[in-house]
Image (cartoon, rainbow, N blue to C red):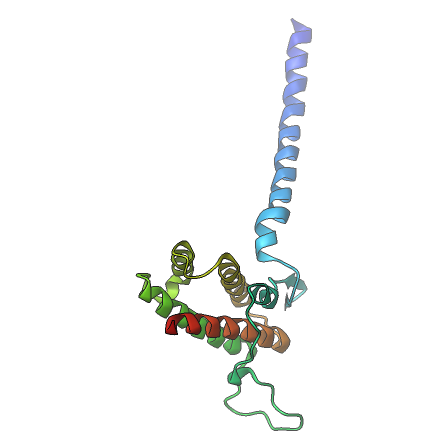
Length: 184
């Protein structure tokens, strides 16, 4: 009887750490391969203090969708030696302007196909457009990548000029693609 009690007790002492270890390893694997892989992909970087995140390569996703990268006028770099304009957008404002323009165009297209007339519903509208065959999977993934990059930049608030410029190109290029679909 005593041996049986000791065996059960020993199994109890070993089981919980083993289960915790297995769950911990599974969680790390899931984060690295699942959630983090969707949020953090090779591409541009965002730094916040000592933390450096690599965000989704939105430009790569846009090019994979067969969309040529274009630069919006508001993101054009100033010529060398020129004085900075008072109305020049900060990197954060550049990202938010580019996203706002893209969201507006996606909303216009979605409304034509019985989607939501709400710029906050870009994700739901994109899913409807994909389901109805208005956009293809690559365009959908490009839009998702641009939205994820915007969300990452907005959360950290630390955006360098190069990342903002690259983001503006991606969002603007997608906007132009969606405009062509709106005009039919």
